[in-house]
Image (cartoon, rainbow, N blue to C red; front, side):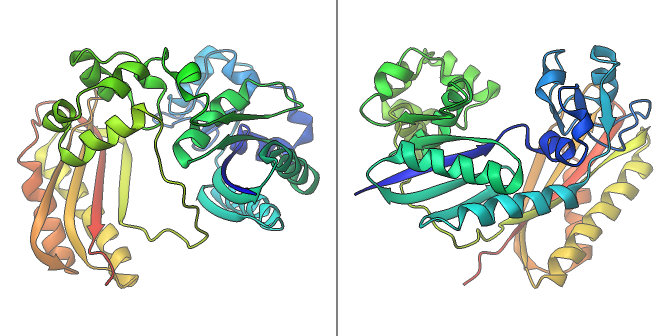
Length: 347
């Protein structure tokens, strides 16, 4: 019996939950996000069914843009409570097996198990989820979390009857070496550009990169992590202990752009106090503050400051947020303001 890490990823989860309670929508392009009214401005797509994705609709895009791409789609409002309940059904189903389930979100989790046949286990997990919830999923199989997570991408493209894929040290290089670094878990477009500037284009390049050069560019912690990522190294531990939140954030997109500084300060102060009050109500103490602004150009800079000493005082957080505002160039109107506060770790 060997220890395996499986990554369970639900298929088009939010759309699937909506289709489950409205079976007549099956096979139709479905777009979920905001109020469900595509005529309203500044709403974002939470998810789209596969049929809608065929028209170029994807999560994160404005709902209005989705309507232009697929005007015949069914647009539905987001219903977080329904997705939370459906997610609990899935996770409870997985927990009926002799495995450890580590939840990472509504639609994904890691499963740790001792088994001689991880593919058979993956098949059993998928069948149970379909049988008990009516929802489908795919499963990535790995010898650590990094490889299991990446294996899910290949599982999505596998034969539907299989719905799983194994990625381990044995086939890592043959599967991943030739692929761009963007295909790795945790590397986005900005980091891909940074790596490309160092001459690191493929996963093989990253695996062979000089660790000292990576540490010099990205810092000792992240440089070491990127070097390990190129070789597919990662955590093998799966725990069912809920992850302790390390921060909380509030952000708001405004119906009307904020162009005047007094208006920006008023909304920033309000959001900072609201998030602080929530945190204090949970008994947490704050040690760092982030402010995010999204301009009408969609440029979204983020600034942060560590507090001189931890606090639960909303006025201190609001004042710090307003001080951070001085670091931004406010010549363009603002469409979104966000405030994130980082907690003092529990002792």
